[in-house]
Length: 253
Image (cartoon, rainbow, N blue to C red; front, side, top):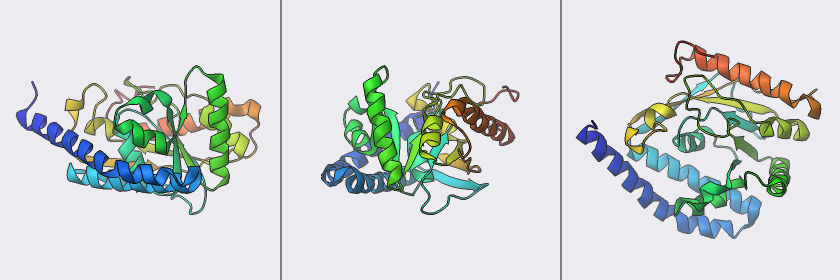
């Protein structure tokens, strides 16, 4: 049974989520008129502010664990594990350089949140080859402007006891085609702050992000996407086990 204080906390967090969304939406709409690059950068600064405020007010605090620091003025393809809806605000805390997110087009249909989502995200419609081609073209343009990309290569929540589920090729194909380094990150606590099974699993506490060593796509050809993908997967899997990520059972692989 749920603790009454837990229920009150979740209601408080949801109310603040909605209120802060209403506050930022007018600014997002105004920023979106300034174009995909300038306007998009402004939108990301706004949602960074939103993440800072909302997480602080609900008692969730971000902690950086740096194995290799992010280089200034270097666009990356950031990748991370994906276990929770809390991954989105954690990602906004973790990456403060110019950024765009690759996300599912369907999420943009969520009332209220969808307005901000569509302004900040490069969307891809699953099952549409034409839409995927358009999204990749947009991503390449963004990277050429020294703006990084964030992609969750698992594509959906990892609902297993394993460190990771299988990766899709997209992030790694894009890295090879644009010669952009991959920056893997680990989100260690998002599932503990908000389990994928229920919104009433939300709790205050820490959100740790581990910044792993960047992996260069130099020397890989378009025919070696799987090799690059497996290299990143192996590093992230190893480090998730080392950091004792809470969803892993008995170091399961």
